[in-house]
Image 1 (cartoon, helix red, strand yellow):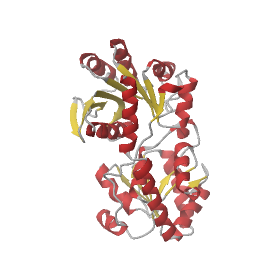
Image 2 (cartoon, helix red, strand yellow):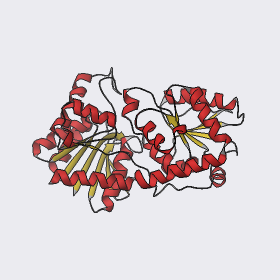
Image 3 (cartoon, rainbow, N blue to C red):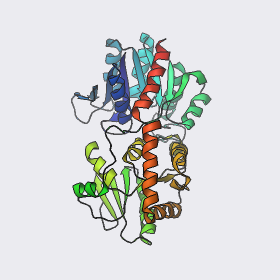
Image 4 (spheres, one colour):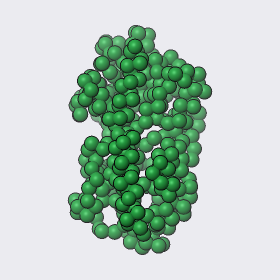
Length: 360
């Protein structure tokens, strides 16, 4: 099949990774996958990774104008719209429907009605796009049970909703020796907590957590990958890193942190980084919210903490740091779960089945 993915994300951010990993394993199955994403420059850029061609179109305001000629002028078997609340995805998707192309909608975040874009311009129109385009689509894919329920409440028939979770990159992310990884990134041999991301509220929460952990384990440190900040003897901000380099930080850590807000957005999410955490074979302590809480409970209830409670998360972390053998065993269980239930290969198998149903 000739498949087009439309995403609002920049390269190496958010939903772009969902598109790229799904495209990677679809390409391995012989499908031709093209991703359209936002580009940082003034000119269109083209890249190819893992057998997937990505077109990076410039200019946020005119994204939809650049994409419509593509969907009208190219004969795709399927077009998958990732986040209908964004006009750069939904408007080309509508034109493709008018043309007669099979269009699917992917829902991996809660955007309107108290979601990510609440209070922004054109909110009523974005709400219509987010809630009505799925009704017109050939099928709807969702990452979480919360988004499935929202799709149902919008009037999408249950037989056209398919849960396609994010996956774990067990092919590239290996379980590596902690000492060797620490040498590569030049960090001290102290207890290390890791957080990957840009969410300011998560980081403020984890600063409270690490201070409570250090009241018991005085040399513990928190490393933040992605978000920029001023480093000190408690928290190190290393900024944006390549995907390949991030793997060294995953392996160098003792505990990986997954705080989640207990709100509509948090309950709807299935963070890409969770899959990467799982693949590295280290214990993960996360908030008992939505899909994150559900997956961590599959491994061990002790890995989930009460939402918005830094003392509870700190207590779970301290227990893991004090019992190394138990920590190692939980890391192995998480890796096995990643391999047997949540690999991108398995996730893509499920998506391919959806495509075949739509085409038939």
